[in-house]
Image (cartoon, rainbow, N blue to C red):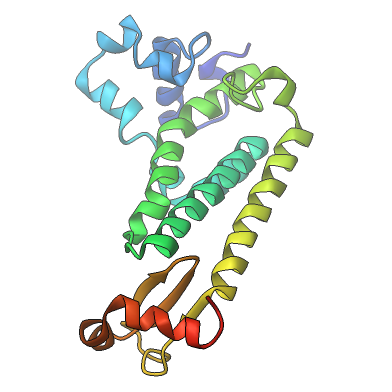
Amino acid sequence: MCEIDSLEISDKWKRRFHLLKKFGADELSHAMILKSEAYRQSSFKERLSFSMVSNFPAFFGGFLYYFYKSMHLKGFVILSFSMLWVTALSNIEFFSGVVIPDAVFWALSACLCSQWANYDLYRKTFHDEVLWDWVPVRWRNKSSVMWLLALSVTVWGGSIYYAMTHTYSTYAAYDEPKAVSVPCGSFVMYATQEEVDNYGREVICHQLELEGTL
């Protein structure tokens, strides 16, 4: 294992690595560090640096930051779960009509990348770690990650296709930027707010029955 001070990296990264070494990153997982005695006895600034504001480029770059730092398999796993997360939220929006804030779609992945990136880069640098230790050993390989990515892309693409083929609109709402999503079973009908107020959901969804959709 090479010494931190001998690495050709910036002083900022040396400080980060020294902190991670102090917290036991050589033996402990990221989650276990948060429960460790070394972490509990550290200063507020050190704990804040580790758990809250670890890496702003990773926060904004997400899985792309992992690719940039040559942590490709972890980047693909993050990308895969991000697509599944977006798919789940999109389906909730589609079938319930609830509007989920855009930040919810990307905030989870961004926060996790920000908190994990420094630890993951430490593990890569000193232990040649390519996937986290919580991943079953038989799945810690490129083939398994590519299968996960393919599955995620398929689910994500299938969700988009389903939404496109099960979404309709009233004539008035066709070019209306503030059209309201009206759930109609496995379909969605977009209508203007005025139509929703005047006619209600049942009448609007009945239009799909008249068209032979439902």
